[in-house]
Length: 519
Image 1 (cartoon, one colour):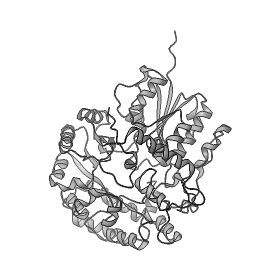
Image 2 (tube, helix red, strand yellow; image 1 turned 180 degrees about the horizontal axis):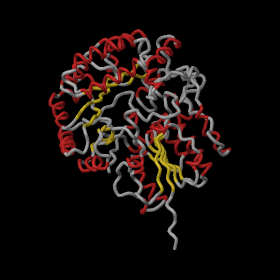
Image 3 (spheres, helix red, strand yellow; image 1 turned 120 degrees about the vertical axis):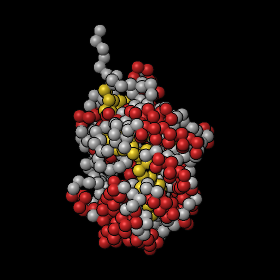
Image 4 (cartoon, one colour; image 1 turned 90 degrees about the horizontal axis):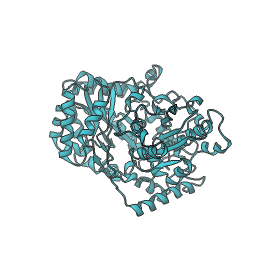
């Protein structure tokens, strides 16, 4: 008897690049890894499996990639819902019997629309993928343990991505995790070790937790014991992690992570304005003065990176520019790794606040929740704020100030930071000061070359991805229409309202903060 050919599976990390870059961003750190964890749910060597990241490689438009598929698995952030619909149309056109599975924040925030679009709309964590595989193909196709399939990635960079915990124990008003309402929990040390041993050796490790520090000192130190042991074994060269502001309350924490091979930490500073931090409900950043925490970290020999956010609906241009001027002039702190506008993500307290106050602009599109497109009514004039947003990511007009900052930062920390750490931090400053130079050399920058962009959601063009890359079935034309947040008058769109009402009622029935077990 001939053995049937293995089912053909395609897993895609769907993405709209805010830079409108059609080639992907292979040099960007961090990369998304959801598609690789999902791939780990399938039994190795029993299925014909391909994993693709649109963030890394650009939009998937190859017609042949969608032919003869048995299953398409999709993941991505909520703003990528439209892109998931595009990919679904492609798969169902080229492979009519293809089963489409979707999960992640998209499904949790748009449960009704997801159920109408995909065959399986998974509200749970990555482990739920095993139940879907079992139902569609059978037990033989299910992996016993979910380990990320790094072997399916074509990354050439020096970084491996590992996860030691899930969700976060804080409730910032703008955060997607607050909208999801899941409880923070850490993984078993044995699973953390299994991931590290499964990753490509001799690289650097980036722990992609939302909060590496967590809410238990004992669990944190148990985790460090595993990491320190494997680092000393030579399994990886060093590591970076994301921690919340309360981590810096105890100086012993810095000593402990450095002794375990830590090279750098990322923390969500978001703003140095205390009133704005309180508005964001970011209480963890009020535990230790932020500038003091940054300086202590750098002087301890641990690189520090952070992001900044600006909210034109609650901050004036003058206030935002004053904060930028302070940071570019303060050489005891590095320049931010990224700058963006605050995003009122679906289901967050900030989103609810914007709806209640009628702050959303008319004809606001889900696709535009990218951190660079203005979604809400600003305090200042729309044209002035749009210009501020256009210049924000590369700090236009501040080149000389940034270069002076580089020199001052180097003088302050040349003795406490290694050459490798210093080069990494100063390279980020160079990216802000000389974006055109980096862009010519193929490095990821926001070039701003598309003069059609308005940076205002009402008038921002959808872009070429909303035109099918190849002919799709007539019944799938609606898959290429944008999901609207508001209508032309600025009122909440009926479809969004329906999704959020269902989401709220389901939470009331089942309770919030349900803890899902780790692998």
